[in-house]
Image (cartoon, rainbow, N blue to C red):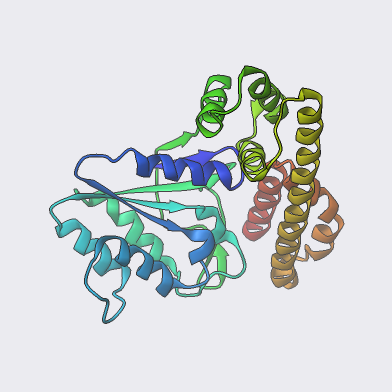
Length: 285
């Protein structure tokens, strides 16, 4: 299954945390964060191995061997590949070749091992992965795609009460109002404000001061998002540099840098998907 999360980062990580906390009977959950593993295929294999094997590792096995060992075990496994869209970056280890995706695709024939991939904003279908140094679609074929529902007001209220039992209804309501962005709630902002509250030594008897502080933290959060957006936009332009000699799109990407920064800061990824579709069309032409 491919689960699509609506926000960058925090929603996906929280979803993985919730899966672990379910403690499904006779099922072990193995998680690999591809954002961190993409630069080292050996590290990816080691991360999987260490989650289900107790004995020291003499030699890192290949992916086929890891999956086969899981299939032969008495228990069942769910392999979660979080942030699979990170495999579209330009710094992916060349050992993540097409065989990597073929082995993952073979899991549909396994009885004891299931695969769950998590992507942000859109499903993996049509994504151009960096496969052995070339950007192309993978051999992975997942038909079941589910969108992670957006947070509801009741869920946000429950989360805030769980994290901050010291707060009564009034500050909780102000927190919810700050976290709400349009018709949805931003989990990343919720997490950021919650951490700021935990580290604060102030008392919040004065609601006007509390509201001012929330607005100040909100501005800090948006500045951090803007910096991260700038970094990701530069990565996209850097990837365009590598293929510009083929598709002649470097100038186009450079002109759109500021647009990318705004889009990523929101983060609405529709424009990026439009770029990818355009590049795919250029490949076919």
